[in-house]
Amino acid sequence: SPASPGIASGPAKIVQHASEIDKVLEGDVLVAEMTTPDFVPAMKRAVAIVTDRGGRTCHAAIVSRELGIPCVVGTENATRVLKPEQLITVDGSEGKVFEGRIAREEPKIPLVTPRARIRTTTKVYVNLAEPELAERVASRDVDGVGLLRAEFMIAQIGEHPRYMIAQGREAEFVDKLAEGVTTFARAFNPRPVVYRTTDFKTNEYRNLKGGEEYEDVEENPMLGYRGCSRYVKELDVFKLEIEMIKRVRQSYKNLWVMIPFVRTVAELARLVRILKDEGLRSSKDFKLWMMVEVPSNIFLIDEFIDVGIDGISIGSNDLTQLILGIDRDNPKLAEEFDERNEAVMIALEKAIKTSVSRGVTASICGQAPSVYPELTEKLVEWGITSVSVSPDAIETTREIIAKAEGRMASPSMWRRIARTAS
Image 1 (tube, one colour):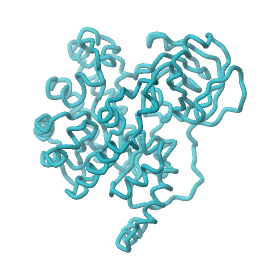
Image 2 (cartoon, helix red, strand yellow; image 1 turned 60 degrees about the horizontal axis):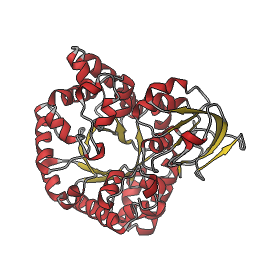
Image 3 (cartoon, one colour; image 1 turned 180 degrees about the vertical axis):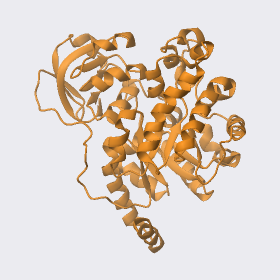
């Protein structure tokens, strides 16, 4: 199925395991059963990506959209049907793979965007993970980074944090992570950069050097030992991230924090206390966001807000799969995975309206707004304060938001837009 638009041709390099990524050279098409964060160095060299498994919210789809390269996922048999070094063309817009070179390659993310800048009250943020893209994307018509993923930078470090702690190399881990995050904070300053603390799952942690010693093999890592639960149970590891955040903020106050996969109110309360004890408390230049991606976040949204968060960001990828009970990486269920499902829409509306009424900002950082323009219009109607999308969707999302605001704008909103523009 289509996962990232564009057309590109190149020789197929079939990678069965992350240990084989060095076989992928500049200009190759990466073909794999599935990708994980440790595939990223090869993904950056590839002109296109094809996978056997996954849907449009899987790792390969998300990273391809960020890198601006074509991607087709959920083919079920690409690693078996395609031959090593076979010249193929990947059409990421149509979700098709052809033999031979059949069309000119489309460019990656443009260096410049010729369109005139549009003013909107609803902010447009971008989802990013690759430090090399920071400067280029920061020059676009974007209000900040609504989702800065830590996982790809940690994958580049390549070693399990607990393995590094055991060797007395905590400072090295902090230094390397701070270097990557500083790149984003500097490029976007003074616009906010919302750093999502690590959301590696156990299978992804196991792929790091030393990981097998510290991680269990879980039947279902998506519902396993991840997110906020890990932080409160492994405080020594989480404090490495806290140290990095504090260090970067010494120079760049535009770095904010977002906590992923929060299951219970008590869990969040404990984490907020930990951050406050470390000097990270809400202020004019520091905001703490919580991702809304577990159904409990919807049912108890008021109670989560009471704990003391400044904003929410809806992780529509995980929220949709948990509301609908659909594995978002299963190609056989790809057609049923739809954020526009009535149950999901009810959840989105409740989260946004409740948050805004409580004076808490509401954002969304899943793939849905990048894919469904009509959903973005609904989000604006419900009062969402920002929408965070992949780099390829920045300008179109701004246009969709401007049209939606134009249809529903009251005179007071137009005055706010005028003040923003002045």
